[in-house]
Image 1 (cartoon, rainbow, N blue to C red):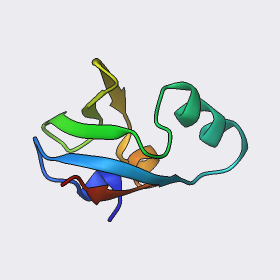
Image 2: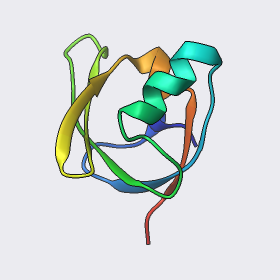
Image 3: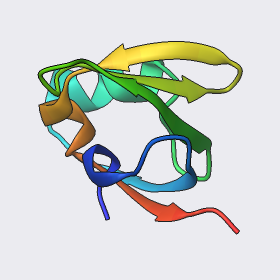
Amino acid sequence: MTLDNLPLNRDAVIRTVGGEGALRCRLLDMGLIPKTIVRVVKVAPLGDPMELRVRGYALSIRKDDAHQIEVEAAV
């Protein structure tokens, strides 16, 4: 599943980070790296952007960017 489809307040582990070039580097620089636990905390009323909790801080990203990140449900 991709990060944009993760239900609210559910933990997931990042498996892969897609995208190309600058987008991929930006996502990795923000801490969205494989094997990191991430949680969707809020979604804007129109669905974009979405707020994540990753590595102890809040991060807002666009839904299109979240679609590039593959996750699996945390145990």
